[in-house]
Amino acid sequence: DDAGDASYFLGINRNKKSLTVDLKSPEGISLVRQLAERADVLIENFRPGAMARLGLGDDQLRGANPKLIYASLSGFGADGPMADVPGYDLIVQAWGGLMSITGTAESGPLKVGVAIIDLVAGLMLGKSIAAALYAREKTGLGQKIDTSLLEAEVAVLINAGSNYLMNGKVPGRWGNAHPTIVPYQSFQTADSYLVIGVASEGIWQRFCKAIGKTDLVDDARFEKNANRVENRDALIRLLTEIFRSRDNHTWLQILNEAEVPCAPIQTIDQVFHAPQVLHRDMLVEVAHPTAGTVRMAGLPVKLSATPASVRLPPPLLGEHSEQVLSSWLDMSADAIERLKKKGVI
Image 1 (cartoon, rainbow, N blue to C red):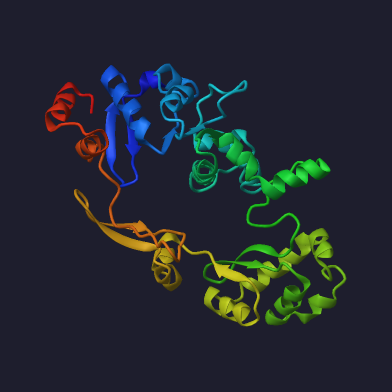
Image 2 (tube, one colour; image 1 turned 60 degrees about the vertical axis):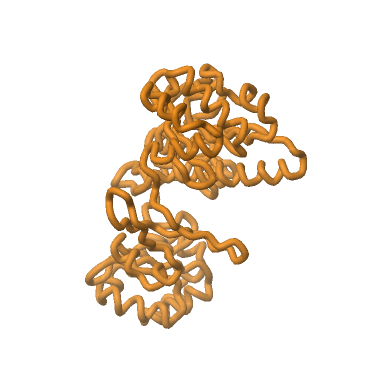
């Protein structure tokens, strides 16, 4: 949101504490300035210029704390002709080209099933913050980081974007298939769906033997991947009928035994009951102050020397305002109570 519409600044400190501050009040802005003087990193995702208009811009805060890493994430970047355009994941998926290559020719453009660009942009920002903190160890100085949803999307167009830049051909929608590898897609079985990835000639030969169609190996139409791409429709029609002849479990057993990359298309409940997911601690339970026991996805990265764990639930809005102000700013209980009564926190 623009600062004119924002009521609160929400910060999470290194101890996973939540503080709310009214940015429409001079006292609230003063609190943020004081906190920024003691902070390692500040992350904001207002529209470009909003923080500066509040007196909380990069130059303003790093003037008092040169070691501050000031990280900004916006929809389309801090400058340029679209800097003021608000960014939402759906909007940027459409504008940045991702939707044009998602879906099938029949379905029309589709968005990804989760807010993928929001997530990717956040991951890119987090990686950049780690790099800036490392640079600070060498230089002693912080810096500003500026990125956007748009730039994250353009970066993750990867092979689709690179292929266009190299040959000038605008990619289309391939659904669950692959533009340059065949067969590399989903198939319907007698009772469900699975995917296969025949990504080499060795796999192709094992695949043909596993499905009982060794004659396909010597078929000139399908001999090499380039031939299979050229004759995609004929091959997929043939494989579609074959896969419908048996159930998912049987096919997966056959393909796995033949070392053909494959997987069932699992629903979310199946994923969170999967032995591998549970073994890797990707399902955790924590006690929540209002919701009781809450199940959450675990931490996706394991560190051998400094292992992380989920010990606390997401904090309630402003749950730790008093703790943050008393510990970070040495503010007295009376002063904190006055701010609460005025609606500053």
